[in-house]
Image (tube, rainbow, N blue to C red; front, side, top):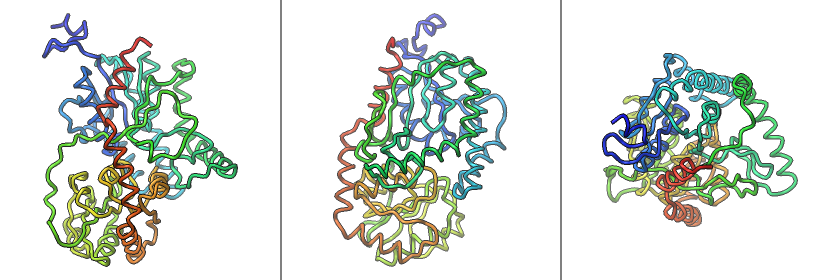
Length: 424
């Protein structure tokens, strides 16, 4: 058995293996969920796949073929503090805290993950684009690596606004000037993370990075802004989903349904959910609310308008039964809504959500409204518009057709395998 493993064979089946791939991603459900679907496809192509992170991230792993290797030092308090900064990401003080917490998490990975990867015999790395520790660790260990982009492409390009701002696309001189200013401010804000990375580059004596073998994305090309400076290694794609969801058990007939979600981090915004439920009732619709565990049973019961409420719904299946969606702009939920051809009213709260919402507006698949001081009648008016005007649903169906024609996680796994097993 030992000889078989040394020769790259599976001890269970005696089949050749591609190697042992370590995934380094953000320890959040919105990132772990899609990459573990990708991990299942990679496992089917001969990879042994391990997610490496703080022990608290184990809670998000549900895919049996994905192993979990924890960093050696306990970091429960650090993880809780990190998540807490993400719950309320807006405002200069909160934003600064979030960036510093992210820098600390990156530093922990750089301190401890290389030893873990060596111990478990990793031969290649799959790094989430939002966690810059992954490529640096791969370079230190002289391992080939690929990048997984679960959200919007994170490339600085003068013709495209920074990926955390809800600016509309402007392909003119003023747009480029504004974008360059936005990138300059972004670089200034991100200095805590840049310092952690640069310090470790110097300590490890690393030369200039030649980049990943391939960069795969969930984002369909049609949803993104036009680009002219994408790396040759980058591949647009379609959502990484398992496709085996349960029946949503929703009522047949009756009022139209509207899916309402703020993701898993912002699910405790009770007042915002109440506004959603009231707006749906005002237009004769029924809200289907998924709060991600952020509301108590008492808070669920107090929501107006007779909504259907759960912590979690089989999201893709529910959206196929809905006439519209009210979303915070989280990328996974937006992709699921567009895949179902459902128009969206976006209420972006933070992170890349405003930029995602701006792209929804640009393609004509929905509206964007600030969630600050949002009134039920304002939301009701926007909802009525996206439901009544067929152009919104038609635009969503255009993206749905592109998603349906895509190869999802299977295509991404093929690209990763081809790139990481080549002799380049």
